[in-house]
Length: 245
Figure 1: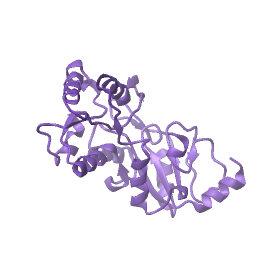
Figure 2: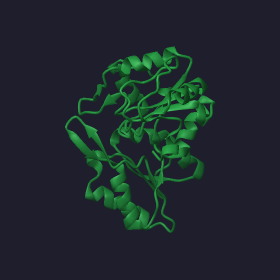
Figure 3: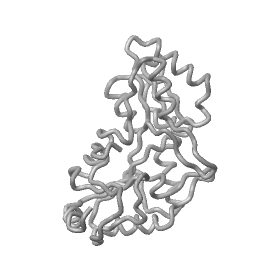
């Protein structure tokens, strides 16, 4: 991107959306660790006149637990600034009167306390980690295959992610297995679904062209601030779904 076009883009920015894992911190069995410079970058952004929100496909903990972990790392962040798939899924379930069979990590189950789960008429899967056993997957399969019109929600569709001890399969792999077995297309809730990002924009009260977005697939080594008009490396884009992220 040319310097002039970047400067023009920055002048129109009113907000920034940051991905979290791989941008702010690296995951690990001990809770992970902040990426060097990320704590200070968030402080600089918050000191600017830009609105700041955080997006994550974290589905192994409630937002409260997740945010508390990041606060211990030194991040200035609050629950209301974080958008994750589970609360968004709950809103969809209530809106459509659906009762989910859950195949999710134990730590995120409390997010679904407000929805009815008896006699399920849909399946919700998230990053269940070791809960992705044959038995649990087969239970989800049996719920779906018994429905006249199977409904499958997936809290993200990632292939894999990195932790301190190496790469691990993500929810998208198991989503594809259930899609294939039940001849159904999952409804993805979370990144990179455009409607997920639209809810963030609605909360900020701004439009897509007024937002900068930083995700873990970019090569940015530092986050630009509103007062820094240097052209960024690749990966700093106006809106995620415009790149098919």
